[in-house]
Amino acid sequence: MAMLSRLESEAAMNIAGIYPPITTPFNGDGDVDFDALRLNIGRHISTPVAGIVVLGTNGEAPLLTESEGDRVIEVAREAVPRDRMLIAGTGRDSTRSAIQAARRAAGLGVDAVLVRTPSSYRSQMNGGALIAHYDAIADGSPVPVILYNFTAATGVNLAPEIVARLADHPNIVGVKDSNGDTTQIAELVRTCSGRLSVLVGSAQTLYASLCIGACGGILAVACIAPHACARLAAFVSAGRHADALALQFRLLPLARCVTTRYGVPGLKVAMDAAGWIGGPPRPPLLRLGGEEAEEVRRATCDFFASEPQPSPLA
Image (cartoon, rainbow, N blue to C red):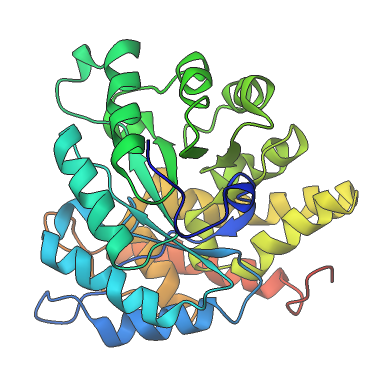
C-alpha cells in the first residue's frame, strides 16, 4: 500500500480552498513558454488560492509530450512555495501508464495527483473496471490521489457509489467533480464526507456546491479571477450568503465563456484580456477570433468593471 510522502495523511484528508487549473502557455513557434508559465504562477501565488493544478484539462495535458509535461511540473515546483499545494494531472487511459505518470510527478515534487477517468473503451468502464484502475494507481502512487470526474470530456461518469468504494483507500484523498450536477455533489458529500474531500470543478455551481458541503473548487475561472473565487468561498464559510450569491451571479457569464461555451481557447482569450499570459492554444485546438473572442473579452471586462478591490472578505 502506498504511503503519503509529501503531506501528513491528516492534512491530506482536508484538501480545501480554491485551486486554479492553470493553462500551459505556448510561444509563437508552438513550444511551451516556460517563462510565461513562471510569471502566471508567480501572480497566482500572490492571491489567496490554496494551491495550483498543472496538466489538467485546461492545461492541455493531452496535447503535451511526456517530457514537456515533466518539465511543466519541474518549473511549477520551483515557483510554487511549499505552503501551497502543487497538484498535477496524471490521468492516462492505461492503468500502468497512469501509475508511471504518478510516480514521475511524485519524483518531481508534487503534493498530490489528479487522475481523470479513462476515456478509451468507455463502454467497458463499469464500476469494477474503475475501482480496479484507481485502486492500482493509489497503491502505486507515492503521493495522494484525487479522483477526477468530467463526463463531458471522457464519456465516463464516476458515480458516487463508485467514489464511496474508492474512499476506503487511504491514499485516495479527494474527488473533483466537473459535471455541474449539484445532486451528484450532494451525494458525494453525503457518502464520502470525512473520508475524502469533495471539490467542485464547475464555477457555475460553486456557491451551491459549497453550501451543500463541498470543500472547495478547481475552477477554470480561477485562472482569471482567483481573488473573486477565493472571496466567494470565504463568504460562504463566514455565513455571508447574500454576498456569496451576488458574487456567484457576477461570475456566471465569465465562467460560462471559459468553460461550456468556448473552453480552453476562450479561457486563454479571457486571460489575455485580464492581464495574464494566455496566448494561443495548441492544435488541434484553434485560437478564438472574431465575434467569439470579442464576446469573451467583453465578459471579462464587464466582470472586472463590477469587481471590487481584492480582499478576502471585502
